[in-house]
Amino acid sequence: MAEDDWIRNSLSVTYAEHHGLFVLTTAYRESDPLNAGGQLLLHSLSGDRETRSVLSTCSPLAAMWQSPRHNLWLGGSDGSVWTTAQVNWPAGGPAFDVHDAGLRWTAMWLPPLAGCGLPPNVTAVWCPADDAVFLATASGSVYHWNGRAWREFDAGTGASLTKVHGFSQDDVYAVGYRGTILHWNGRRWSVVPAPDLIDAVTIVTGIVALRATGEVFAVTNRGELLRRERDRFALVEKAEGARFMGLAPWRGGLAAASADGAWFYDGHLTHVRGTFAATDVRTAGGRLYFIQTEQPGGPGCIEYSHGPAGGEWSRIVF
Image (cartoon, rainbow, N blue to C red; front, side):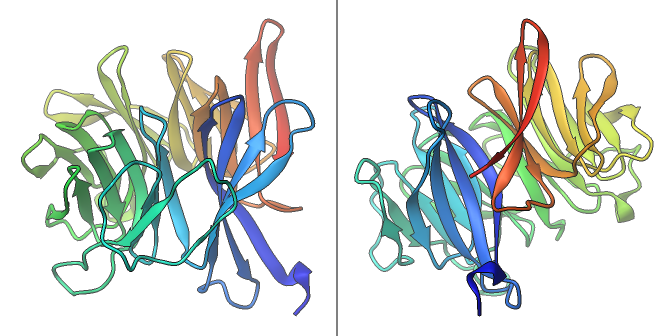
């Protein structure tokens, strides 16, 4: 099969020190999408914008977050977990190749799901510290690393989870299918009701806790923007025709990725770009990065930077 038969897509980005980006990518043969491999790239944001590989594996890497101490945490859909933090994990984890001696990686297999004994499919990662790591999964469970061991928590909804975010290790939210919004108080997960949602057809696709205001916002695949109001999430605004896929903090407000492009929220939802479809959005190094649904020419994303003259949009191919 020719080299061109490989599909390579970016999945997530996070800021790298010295003006760069870590880019999580997946690669698979067009005829065999179920057997994807994972690769982490380091892309320079200055000079000639060079991109190089720093980690590659046959494991299907799916999610990434960077801790406040600048350690990377990755999760795979095969139950693998990876980090550059100092951890004491057992030997026998997934195989990988390291191309950057400056990063020391450790990997392991997560404990199997208690209900079925299968490996968990990690869909999202968030960590306020290297001893407080939360992994959302497609089965509805959340895995928690406390610096010593992994523990699985199941809120009992059975709904696949899509994102996880929060304020601290005792104040975390996870969201997903069937209008599911969960909250962790440091002891247990509980369902936070969202009466305005039609549960059966709604996927909550993004969640952001804004430290500056103490507010928590969520978005759905039906164009809804929600905000936590005491004991529930209430509808703030609905963008007709939008299908939100991700949410990120941006300049005191929010940026949302959608099937119809980019949206900003600063008290009101505004459709600011409609020339691409996006599956997620991340804030990194004072810029926004929209992960495109279609990535012609190789893994890439849409970069947005705000300057004195206004906003600037460009497409980056890694």
